[in-house]
Length: 146
Image: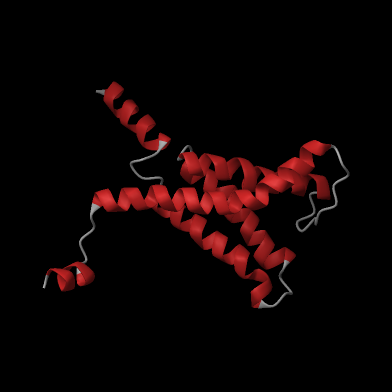
């Protein structure tokens, strides 16, 4: 009976949820970091940048913005620092990749950027959770305000 109650319960265990948010942030951030790190290395190498210019900002500017989203914002999200704010450039980048850069592609050509967009939207909605820098900062701000 306990197993049935556990499976069909709609109660949320906050400890499990906060632990899951930590694990989810680390995994999703690390996955995107595998795309961002090589781009970051290319950016600092000084080599010529050949990149799409999907919204008319120029190839170099577009590349710098996606490096910011995929590399720097992924690190912030993994740490749980400025988490909700850090998801915005990532979601925007994935939106552009899905609907503009790969707009004419089949679904399978857009799928990974759509999945990233949904995962980072989930982080935006839930926030970083208890095991994050955001939580520590907020906790200290509330404590100092009293």
